[in-house]
Length: 199
Figure 1 (tube, rainbow, N blue to C red):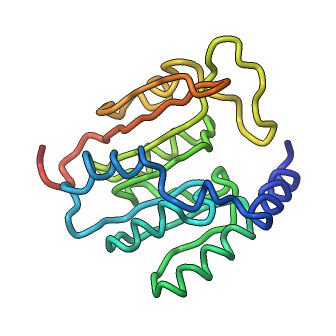
Figure 2 (cartoon, helix red, strand yellow):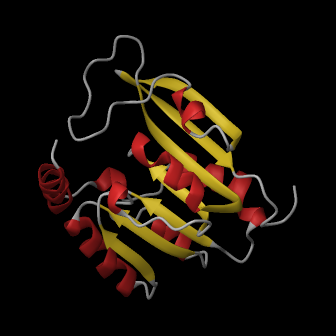
């Protein structure tokens, strides 16, 4: 699906409202609390790719993280901007496809990718992590004979594929399981280095 079609698709969805994307994903909260929070007690820098209306971004900003959100939907970014202003939170917002974001090397302590996995940007995502930085990712997974995929998404990951996409990250959590008619992968990886408290 072309960029303009994908943007229109998500603009319409966010105009109609997506209540399921308003609260932080339980896996994100548990992974952050278990692996990341103690390493960055005073917050850090985070990039939320395809961050939508900010279910993770706002949660992190309230914990004093410096948050950058990228999402293809201008509607989502506008709604997130309004919500952040109401809460007196400062966010860096970009209405872009994730592949169009100008990744800079060693810029983020944490990168968040939920249900938008673009194989073409994995190298840039890895490069943008600071030494000692974390990637928290959750994505659709091909499971069994799963053929029904969302036309707006990239092809679902194959089993264990995420490990080959980020071979230089140390996998500290990796689970794959079936969910209804498809699968889901939950992953936390860490870049080697000494930023944050030593383990």
